[in-house]
Image (cartoon, rainbow, N blue to C red):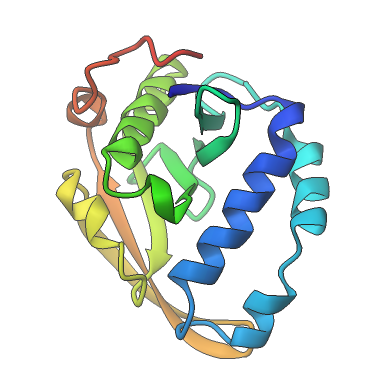
Length: 184
């Protein structure tokens, strides 16, 4: 397995992970009709528009198996939803296929993502996730501190988002034995 910068040719693999992980993670949390209507084809087109995006401190990394299949992805960049300027970077999305979970891959991807953000001058970061997401504790396990909650509405349902933050990304980078060489 290798973690590397996503390329346009990874768009369909990223889309598949995106759709499959939403369907498994958010079943019973988001409306089933919304999840069923998610389309790999539509998400592939969206990812084709943003890949590659390798500006300093932002981009998308993929974890691929030896055969080349995408097992997971993480996208990141400058903070989009300002919390009084408290954080420079944001993890926009981190998704893994169910069969790739529980093997340390998410930790490695977060470490690689943090390394890329730091290379681009971003020293702190945060991530938003649904409070009902059963895997949100992953961020606490990686040292993220709960910093904010906010109510919202998504797909016709009331939701609450939770933000986790790292004021210093250095410890997050150290969670990986790949250090700065993440295969990108």
